[in-house]
Image (cartoon, rainbow, N blue to C red):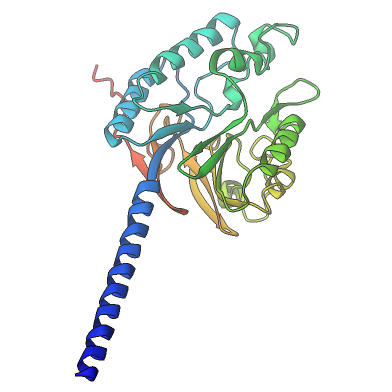
Amino acid sequence: MKLFKAQFLCLMVLSVCLVFISSCKQSDRDQQEENAFSFAFLTDTHLQPERNAAAGFKQAIDTVNSLNPDFVITGGDQIMDALGQNEARADSLYDMYIEMSGLFNMPVYNTMGNHEVFGLYESSGIDSSHPLYGEKMYEKRLGERYYAFNYKGWRFYILDSVDEREEGTGYYGHVSSDQVEWLKEDLEKVDPGTPLAISVHIPFITVQTQLHSGSTEANGDGLVITNSKEVLSLFDSHNLKLVLQGHLHFLEDIYANGVHYITGGAVCASWWTGPRGDMEEGFLLVHVEGEDIDWEYVDYGWEVAVNED
C-alpha cells in the first residue's frame, strides 16, 4: 500500500511538472507572437510627375497596405529631385511626396537621401544664403534628419548619411559630427541587450562595386559612408542586428558579425524606366520575431507603360 501511495505521489508530481513545463512553453510562444512584427522598407522612390512615377508609387503603396505591416521606413531619395532644381520645382516635389505618403495606412518614418538636398548643384540657380538651402528644406517639409524610435522591444535609429563637400560642389557619404555625438549620448541610455536597427540612405558597406568592377576596386565617397568605422564602432557594446541601406538601386544582404546589412533595391528600379538588371521595382518586407529577422523583396507588379502608337 505504501509503495502504491509513493508511486501515485510520484506520478502526481510528474504530472504537475509536465503541466508547468507545457505552460511555460506556451507562455514563451505567446510572448514571441506578441513581440512579433513586420515593417516595409521602401527606398529610392524618386517620385516625380514624369515617367508615370506617381502611378507606380501608388501601386507600391497599395501593395504595402494590402500586406499590412506595422509601419514603413523609407530609405531616402523620396523625390527626384531637389539637388539641381529651383525652389518651385523642389517644393512641388515635396508636396507630391507628402500627399502620396499620406495614403499609407500605417506610420511612416522617413530617412533623408541625397536627392532631398536642396540647391546643392549650380543648375538650381541658388546659393548657400537661401533660407532653405541644403538640408533645411527637408527639415521644414519632412522633419528631423536623424532621430530614434522604439517598437516592441527594438530601437530604430534613422540617420542622415548625406553631407556637403567643403568646396560646395556636391555631396558625399558621411554621418555628421553632431549625429555622432547624439548617438554616443543616446546609446549610453540604452540597455546593451536591446536589439537595434539603423536606417541610412548611403550604405555603410556594399559589394556592388566589387561585383561590377572587380574585387580590388574601391568604393567612391559618394557610394558609401566615409566614416563608417567610426559610426559602427559606437554600437560595439550593443546588440546591433540590422542595417537598412539604399542609394545604389541594388539588392544585397551582407551578414557579418551577427548584423544584416541589407541594401533594399529600389521602388523605382531603374528610375522608372524598367528593371535594373534582374531587379524589379520593389521594396523589402521585414519580419521580426524576438531578435530573429527574415525578409523578402516584394515585386509589386508595376510595368513601364508601352506606347502602342
